[in-house]
Length: 158
Length: 158
DNA sequence: TGACGTTGGTTTCAAATTGAAACTATTTGC
DNA sequence: GCAAATAGTTTCAATTTGAAACCAACGTCA
Image 1 (cartoon, rainbow over the protein chains, first blue to last red):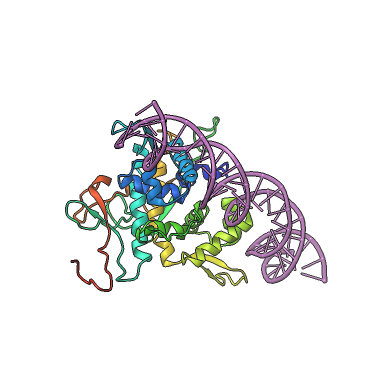
Image 2 (cartoon, each protein chain N blue to C red; image 1 turned 90 degrees about the vertical axis):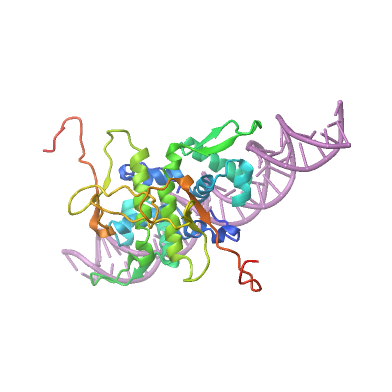
């Protein structure tokens, strides 16, 4: 996915975010960041990816405002990588991804990790698109509504 | 993201789905499939990607059970690519991705596409992780609970 | 002080992937 | 039947990936 979005996709609201996330490694880094990891070495150990790749992905995430490199936390002279507000905004997406995984990638009784409420230990509620008044929405009940094109001359549709 | 998950990540519930989705192009293909596109040429025109890449991504999505290649629909002798149940399961994820995009990639008044309810034209409700009893969950209120490791000998934790 | 391990990278280089373009084969429209 | 459209595959140069080697700064302990 190198091709930059010079396309009408630039408006679409999916292609741009995809570009910012970058790739699978980046999203796993974000997942681990939600899990509390902050240091280069922690990410590397957790993901088992080459250091140059990790460095590149961290740079990418920082340059897209998803991570922030902060100077320390225990006085050590190293950096730490923490989620920005924008990065934390990815939480629902990660939950959705995980739930999709839980639904389709494990046999009925195959044990698998599960996201649960820390306090109660109960699994997180299924994330399902709904209307404003709470009714379930199927994909085919929705449309992507593109905004009316406004040129400088025509502020109102002719 | 070529490295296959021989890692403990294989249990994690995020890495496996990521691998199935494949990459950004694949997800855009799925988005377009939700939008009603079905034909090779439609996807190519919509995405503007090279045909070899599109072919490879379609093969990937089919091999992972996200798309299905069905023989026709208007009697024409061509194939069509339609979402499987598993593929349709990606709807919440796409909604989450789009909502993240809407929140962080557009200026206050910058026009952008929006996912709305077809009937009412109202935007889809914000997708937010909640507890079983409906309370909002912040990332730090949750943990990934790994299942207890069961060896053949110890069916119960010692 | 200085040898040594740890942490956090960068550099190098071969192998894999990407993507544009050319090519091919099968339909479809007329 | 012929031209154009559709749905790919092949080819090849350029980019990206990732393993491994290298390097620099810091801690530490003797």
